[in-house]
Length: 345
Image 1 (cartoon, helix red, strand yellow):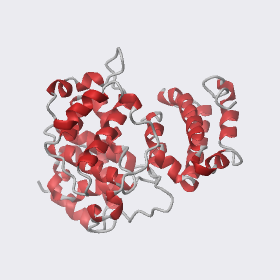
Image 2 (cartoon, helix red, strand yellow; image 1 turned 60 degrees about the horizontal axis):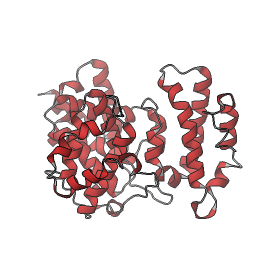
Image 3 (cartoon, one colour; image 1 turned 60 degrees about the vertical axis):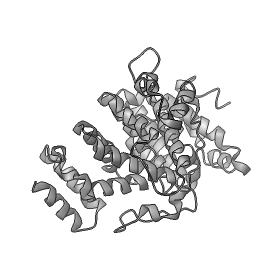
Image 4 (cartoon, helix red, strand yellow; image 1 turned 90 degrees about the vertical axis):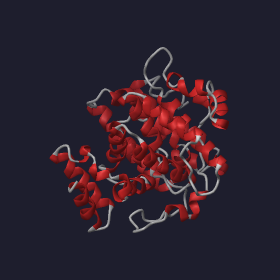
């Protein structure tokens, strides 16, 4: 009955519908059904809610009614993060596919979820060795449909990932990732491609040592940087969506993000990598563990020369934002010396 009466079918019933779905006697009981048998239904109901909200949020200025509904959505997902984090963590891919890019805080909520019982180490721990954490060798549970969006190109993708020889595939990859009949990048297709490529890379090298240089997987991910600014932003967000709790995926994609920053000859790519990370960090907590670890490494490790780039000092306001985030991400004293080192060049 709730699927039939969803807001896309009955918009006037949207508030009452979401109140019923999120009711404390319905949603929690659905998620508590033995064997996680209610998870798929709960997931579909919440996806339907987002599909209704998305076009209203995308318009820019939210109408008061939409703003109220969105604020209610944030509260519901805060409860889910506290009581059912494994549910959010398992379906992170499909949830992120239907959340507009402007809803950064809601995305952070979902990506901050870690399996119940896991207690990630403090990302601000000095000299934290991520590759030595036992969780880094473990793959996360992904309940979303990863293969569906890329089914049409999967055979050619698998062939390329096997030996990297099919040059026609990599040359024409950008066109395969566009929405049919348009020049717009298909975000769900890119998200699935990014995650699938990461899973393939980890299956090739299952230990905690990440090898990126001259691999077919990294060539695919670097090819995504050939899109224009809008398309590249979608691709970098798809990578950032995998920076979550300690796992093999988080470790791999953290290395990928840092590799793209360090190896790209285009400063615009470096600036966009920084933007994608920073816009998720300037909001109120929670922040995904992997996001914090990646940004701390980027601004702290001298090999990336982060503070030497002009986009970190292009305006006083921007410089203050960077320094404020750096202060919150690094131990006292180390940030000042790092910023000073960059400013002396």
